[in-house]
Length: 330
Ligand SMILES: Cc1ncc(C[n+]2csc(CCOP(=O)(O)OP(=O)(O)O)c2C)c(N)n1
Ligand SMILES: [Mg+2]
Image (cartoon, rainbow, N blue to C red; front, side):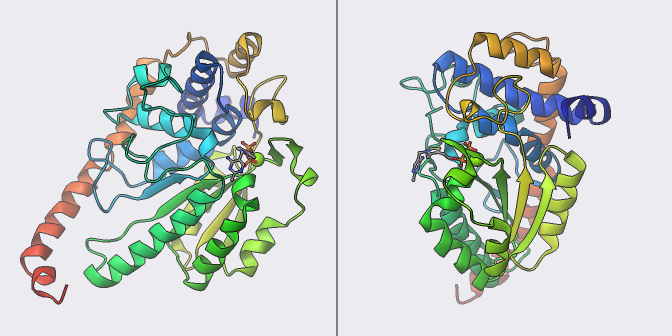
């Protein structure tokens, strides 16, 4: 799906996703280092995931039955920092975004567990996030078997890039997940056909969809810029009783007139001229780091959407701990 269609047919979605893109672009430009291509490419997928699916409450980041979101492609850290800022995590202020990659800021080049609320595990070494996510999903299965789904019932979502899938560690993890039928694990693959050196065919000819199928996964492919298709695919993935992989066809550096679909968007700031051209392509008339109040507020509604779920969960948990689990063999 192209920008014109997104703006015409999915205006609210487009504004939210573009807020992620411009925050990433501006922070990376200010730092004079970072990776804009992934946040620009995966902003639509991430917006649909956070808006329609992810169970979380930004004011209670440690709620134990939250869905887990793991950015395995940790170089795209500005994607998660932008999401955490927009949805209202208290530690991820605009100042932190403006200080991306600066000494003393929590916004390190790659997401660090324990530094940032909402970062579930440290990523950056490619493949590490997807492998850890299999562990998260296994832990969820084990806890649910022990305590019951009234109090343990959450999904683990992963955004993985081509590099994550090329790393050897991903192979064992994918095999284990398929074998264990980890139906609550959903991997969103940023299928952008680009990596640090250029097109993927320079380094890998694996058919990733067949690879995951061969390991026992539920596999789908979607246009990673089409919010309706992304939503439907995540819905189907949640219903599957196997781990799911959704190949999200995206454009790295989406919307940058001269850098989209090139490795130039992978790991360098766009540059002042290209940022101007990209803002024009987006129809985004706001200054650097400026998010209009209505868009911020729409994102904050997403951040607080899980509050009611969390309160209901707390009631179930309190009841359970008075009766069931406390007196069981646990
Ligand atoms: C284990 C490991 N090896 C190498 C790197 C360096 N590195 C960072 S991103 C990247 C390329 C990743 O390509 P892809 O996942 O396709 O990301 P995209 O260019 O699409 O954003 C590499 C080689 C790393 N982070 N971890
Ligand atoms: Mg890639």
